[in-house]
Image 1 (cartoon, rainbow, N blue to C red):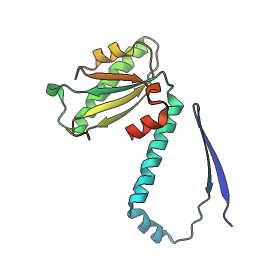
Image 2: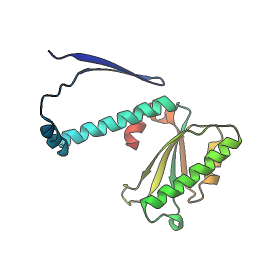
Image 3: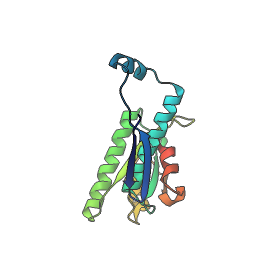
Length: 168
């Protein structure tokens, strides 16, 4: 007889309820390992959905609709040669932002994604930050690698799912 289990996840204002069948191991370990090596298109789709759902929960638990989504791009002369160099630039920026907020007694919470998969393959960063109301000018002054800083509140997306899908 299959047993059903119920799982309730609460992340901020988002509450998920899931009913699932508990897995039972029937195949020997070597058979399960062989299955894990092969990933079908359906399995890839399931993995992608699980990825954006985890991100959606993370966003809901840590950010409100007044927090912000920021896109940081590079000037042509400051464009890093590879992904690792772009990560270093972003970490330097986040260190300065954290220091600035710490001096004012403000916390810094963030999630970031570095992306370079658009048509021109140009590296850029997406950040979700807790907003303070005075962020645009501060972020523009701290982002020394480019002038194009795009900022919008999370309520622009009408929920966390759309932003999570975009970032994942």
